Length: 150
Image (cartoon, rainbow, N blue to C red):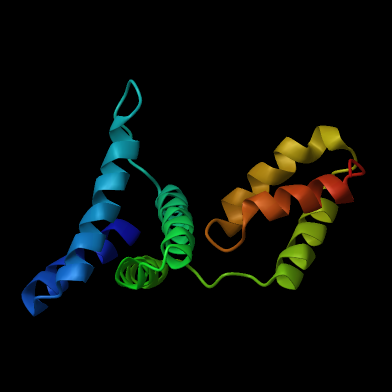
């Protein structure tokens, strides 16, 4: 479904002559293809996996943006900002830290997770339900803290 949205947007951008949008959408497709063909067997990514790919792309661009801004390269920083905006349009709305904390607490209760041994199971369930909606590096720290490890 998400893949179709990206491809339809790519066709529209090509017809409209939006060069930056076309190149960014092609980059998304290239990353998806790279992920699908990287293993021994070719796989078809789910929407959750595609969201993960795009979240990593945004993180990379955010890091580049910081470097360009520190170096005073405003034209390159503007390009990274544009790409972040294009990619972000396909991601679900990000949860605030408070919303994420509430969702994590509720999920821990639902799974009856009690110790750090339950962390893997909890993180897997979080990624399945909230893919693209929260920062899982922050979530991991909170899960660890709530399960008594931090």
